[in-house]
Amino acid sequence: MTQQTSSSDGSGNHSAARSYIKLSGPDSSKFLQGQVSCDMDSLSPSNSIDGAHCTPKGRMVFLFSAQVDEEGSIILDVHPSVMDSALASLKKYAVFFKTEITDISNSYSNSQPPQSDLERLRSGRAEVVAETVEMFIPQMLNLDALGYINFKKGCYTGQEIIARAHYRGAVKRRMHHLALAIDRVPRPGDEIKNSDDKSIGNIASAVRADEGKVEILAVLNDKFSDANEMQIGDQALTAVTHLPLPYEIPASL
Image (cartoon, rainbow, N blue to C red):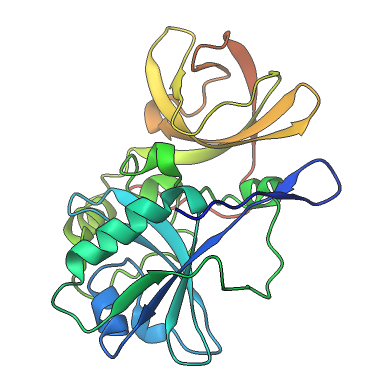
């Protein structure tokens, strides 16, 4: 796996490093159309799209932003920690398609300036990272509110589970933006418990905002999403402040 380091934006916060997967060959778009949550037919040189690649059970392996390069190949922008999982999962399904899948992280340069980790968190967008591969379905990270899912495109890997959660109102865990007065930044995937020591969710993303203050995106059980005290991993029970997301979470049916 290609290793990349984060760069500082000057405020002490870091810009999220990215890695890149290239799909070249005449079947690349057709192949991805049957694998990912977004509509690959809407991808063009002037229009990038965001999507998720999932297991047959609808659990996310990786998130990506897709664009077309000058040669017509498809470039997927992914988190570096999931590169090995992403390549393995894609190649498993690609054997009957004319597409070549390669890691081009060492040679590809994206002209778009990266968001800092805190900017991304405050935009309500969590990463799927190595610790959370296959932990969440797309709606748990609010990806239906963020345009990562096309519910009209037809079949793709995991589509049945994702569509059932959408049309039957079966999404009972959603991601929320919270602030905590703690010193240690939680890890993605860390368990969250309430004041009754009941497991109510998991960390999707966490970033230090100020000295002694951490902001998190937490996937919480709807029944406990308004809890005002939480225990993150092995840290002490602490008060939390609920912060707004910059978009509406779709209501359950």
